[in-house]
Image (cartoon, rainbow, N blue to C red; front, side, top):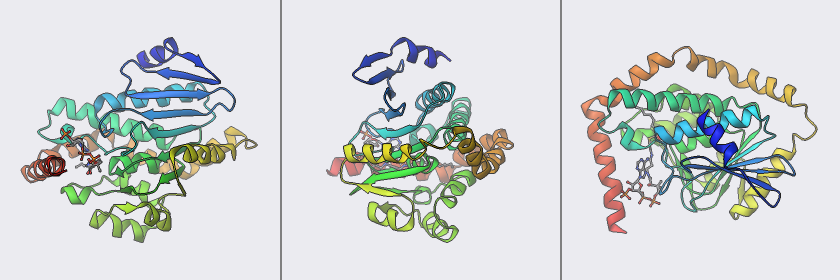
Length: 282
Ligand code: CO8
């Protein structure tokens, strides 16, 4: 609610775009007045990792777009290297139970709102998109990716397990067989490989081209009654959303227990150190 108010308060007119910025600027929202499409740009440097504050704000943006009967949303990143590095590993490393519960709850909420959004959604993947980043992209209805990046659910590489609804989302995007092969090995697909397996729908040479391809996708719905579109999407995705809805609290507790296990903590510590070493070696 607070964010929705902030968004409305800070909106300014720039050309034919209305730019919104939320209080903390973790996400930028601009609406094209000519076609009504909203571009939501993730802006949490350096890698758009998903922490409690980011996810809470993301949920508020999605609620606001829904209330305003958005004609379509393009999700992208302000970085030219990373779409999203997935969940903020620091939310899982040495977790404080109350904060972790709020964090996981906000992740569930963000997925429910994005996966079930009544308006059409498209991801412009202009950088690497591992794990939770891949989940965000897959939760959109269409994906356009730039060359030379990677995307996939690599959780097993970290010694953690992608939750069933992450898996379902991938299974609803590519085949069950390809999902199994990708998940058990924690595979990150290069852009061309992702296209081949159907994990993305189109490749673009740069962000401007990707944004224009995204608008072309959203324009496909120009003559489709929104209510018919929304119901059809619910019939396709609703059962998986309900499955999570009925188990939300239980899943929060089970995930905390899993994450808190010493072996998992050791794995995360090792992975964080590896990221640091990689940086120092650059
Ligand atoms: N969380 C927190 N910090 C991160 C993350 C992350 N996911 N990714 C990168 N960082 C940090 C790095 O440690 C580094 O920090 P610092 O500046 O303090 O040294 C900074 O961000 C920049 O990182 P890089 O130097 O690595 O940046 P690059 O541009 O070279 O590379 C990449 C970008 C490719 C995104 C790279 O950072 C990377 O591979 N990151 C890890 C991605 C990853 O494996 N994410 C998985 C997260 S887990 C998840 O999303 C699903 C969990 C499922 C549920 C589990 C329940 C049990």
